Image 1 (cartoon, rainbow, N blue to C red):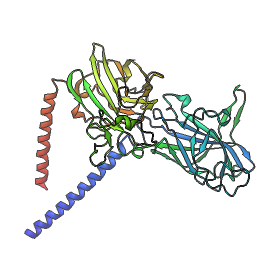
Image 2: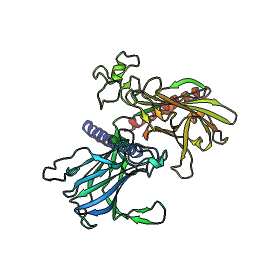
Image 3: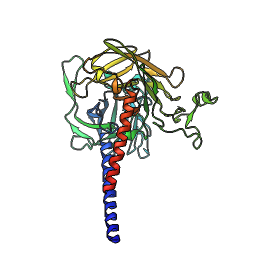
Image 4: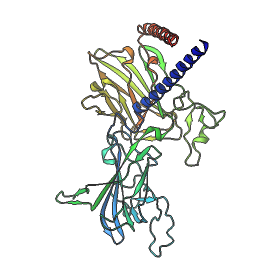
Length: 458
């Protein structure tokens, strides 16, 4: 009997462990699939960067093309130091010349005599030219230092372009080979580019609107963004407060990393450190971010404060604080999801645009600064914050302060998902908190009893 019982117990334990591993695996898969930080963004499901390559004319040994980088993302832009585009030539192509951009390296062009190509590398890397470039080196939509605005925030500036003259490249539609292995850094990692695909030739309307011309050949490359690839940890967090509760719910501890100045000095810096001015004004370039020491260790914190309650309206104050001493955020934007955005009445000192990722449901808003006033979020310090107040009209059927309804469902800063506190930490109404706590204790007891019964049965 003892031997039989032992075998039975071993089978039950192995079956239990096997089931647990399956459940754990399914949980991880579902969590990854439902996470908004993957390449699919539920608030901008069709957002991408499309690179269009238009061959405009043939040359004796190749072609002249205009390459356009179109940002079709609603709220994710490319900030300084700008985009970097790379690819691998299919054959032995060279770049004879470029207008509006340049390669970072020329490569080995020693076999050429007299007329030396601009770049002979098999895998060139291209960057935009800086503002102030001489006019004879510019084309339309170039020379912005690689900065590209988001589609919703500034459509006319949501693209960048340059001209390229390729040699050894084929001189007909059948002999040209499409480049491959496209990469886009904007300015860091995060984008994954698909293969180049031939599409219908682009058409162009003359300035007087009376003539249409078209490219000789066109191909597109589509690049999508993933926050997982862009960074190992989150880049922003959210804190909450309200007029009806004295509790200020902070960002979760170690949201973007933990303070580690003991084993890794320089991870962060105290606000009152005597060495702070020296660190900020360092002449060195390409320095890592210098973050103020905080429990959350995030470069950006968004604070959502439910400020006032009126008969027909309620008011919220939003504050964005920069904790990075080496970063100014130009053309910043904030995306907020809350069901009452269909009745937003007034905003102060922020621009506003509704986003409707779910068709007719208007519960998502894009906010950004007013040009020349607060469109730049300055580095950490006294000026390192921007703030605004939002006035909402109440919907009598849905409005409530119970169960954290007044707080946002999701926030993005510059396109990256910000970490919210856990729902059970939200500020509760004074007459709701105790009953909720009793309910939680009751649920905990029930869950323990059920678990004990299951274990006894097995």
